[in-house]
Image: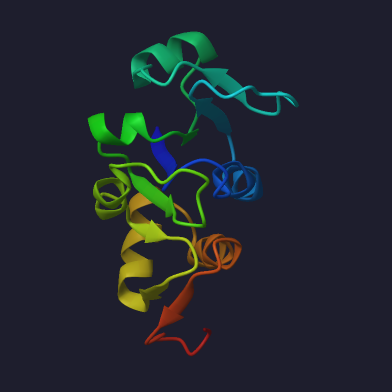
Length: 150
């Protein structure tokens, strides 16, 4: 199982929007939101922010190929296969936002070196084309593209 975490600088930066926009790229995936926020439309399962991976799997009832998690606290406790950070313009910037950002592999709306893109795609088992789609959804521009695609 590959774990992908979407974290952010605070509330209302677009974490849920990103979670929803990328989930279709990952076959056999489950999306979970960790936190205290109200989940009005219930598109994702909402669980307490202090849940561990084992607790999430227990509640979900199975191990999917990809577990996509929106949450900040869990990023402090584990090293996922891929961590995405959303800076945005938060309502209230978290005190630990810079520390969370440093733990992330991808920063939405920032650039990424082509070689690093290939490494990350392989790490999470996503074909390069699909990984390129992921980067497009995150508005990440690839620098020094070896294929001339970006």
